Image (tube, rainbow, N blue to C red; front, side):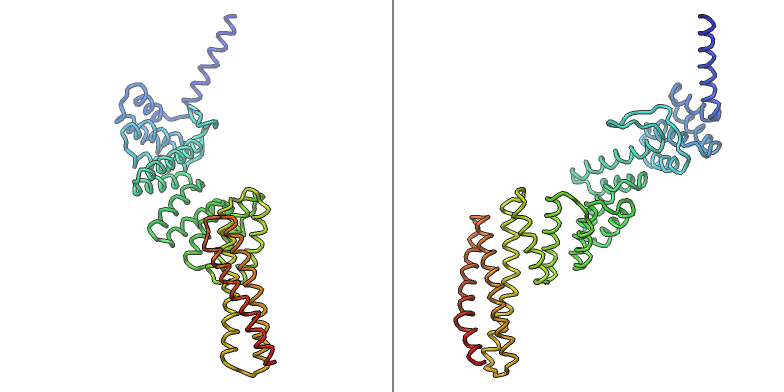
Length: 355
């Protein structure tokens, strides 16, 4: 029994000696001053010497950041040492710890975890209206963990609030280098492109999102539909919007107000195309032309105008049916009914008579 105890004791001594032997005397001295003697001045002095003697050991800057500079609230030095640690070879922590359900075992993992904590601190500051301090936190977090996409999103949003779309897009581009398929990044890129009237980029950005989520897919299609309207591509908007409304009608999760709004916008697009054709026909009739080609074209325009205006009328009625408080859509539908009758009973017979 004594032999076994003696063997275990020797093993423990050898293991401890190996751990300390792997570190310089300077680093061991620094830890002793910090942990036992509570002398941070001496701890810093010896740790800085260790920093030069052990150029690959990431534990040294980690120690300086957490056990020397952090207790003194020297934030700039903490940041400097974290960055220095990331430049060095990753090493195991002396004292692994848990963050949530994840066990943090290495220096680099610990610093990435710090980056998440710092980002969350930035969000708290932002919620309290301290934007400049929040930006500093997000920038610091980004420097510690460039792969944390949330920083690019937050910084982009803040740049957008300052009406600096170029800077906002710049942060998004940085984020895309980390994750090309992040939906939050893509939605923002589309939004900013839309503001800058880069409609094709806005549409292609949204179309790049691949998802099996029907609700998300519908939301994406609704955004694309609205971009076509902003673009004043009404035929394109009608094609896209017609398919969109059909999808919405099949999706029980779509709220009635959303469906009402979409039907209304689709009605407006059809009305716009129908009115343009109507005005063209009216111009021909008022010109009293006898040109056969012009008259034939106007006759076709009149018939097509009826088709578009009928669809517009139906969609206005749909909009009001999904939103009983929407009296405007009903009045628009009744107005269109009068225009359709005018085309049928006056314009088309007048054109046919000339032909």
